[in-house]
Image (cartoon, rainbow, N blue to C red; front, side):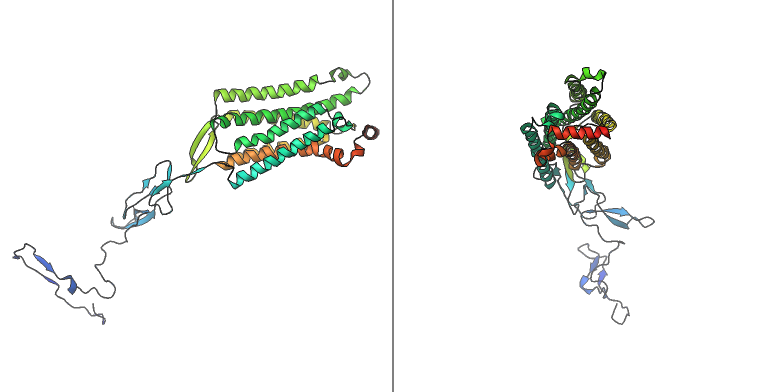
Length: 386
């Protein structure tokens, strides 16, 4: 077609039925005039070719030669033009950005080099050092009235248990190994049960000590270390049996989770039986709620040595953390699931040490005049008059 939009006939070849070479149709392509719109042979299909990374998908209601170019899904590739289907990558590989080749998946776990791992391990170290410092303070001032009045042997055991609670966080950081997977949940459950059992024993001791001072009280025969020691042994033993049964019947092991996150292989501990995990948490929750109820009922005892108010608040913090932990734990995946559990361990342990021991350390270090028998006895007498 010419510039004036008028067409014309142009001879571009001949048809010779008697050509000696057998080629009957002879064309001179240089004589073909395509016009301004086309510079080559116009396509005979209704869409362009699909490039690698795409697949052909039929158009609804259109001829079979008409199709859409649809990008391959995550984990699929196509490495040739006009591919009818995409190919699935192997399980340990993932599609690249352009969906034209498979590349190895990224291996992920909560490592010490990860910013999140660095933050959690740093907080764990600081909290462990803080707990050890408090233990040293209580040992250094072990003969002062405040330390003696709050059952120093139980306080020592509670501080050691809290220190172990902080240190068990390190079992959750780093690449999961056979040993760490086998013991980390058991260590977590047993140390926290020991910790809460100590707090419960301290609470019961306060209640018995106050009521034993009343005339003709039958609780005087229960004074001593046998009752709190029995409570600590009972609480820890039951949790130990639960954890030992879990470890023996359904031991955890390192596993490669291909489906937790797209394009990532998550190295995690396969706990196998989630039932045992929630049984362990359930028993821990039972101890915590029992301690909270007893401490709350005894919070107003007129005793200068009474620490049940601090225990009540500490157990409120403890139970709040672990109640909010369950939905957060269930809704996360991969390394963030481990991070949520570590955060719950750290925050609940820090809540206990701050609520129970911070007021005592404040008096021991900064208010030594309050750490005398005369001051505490006078405070006790004021409380009784009220």
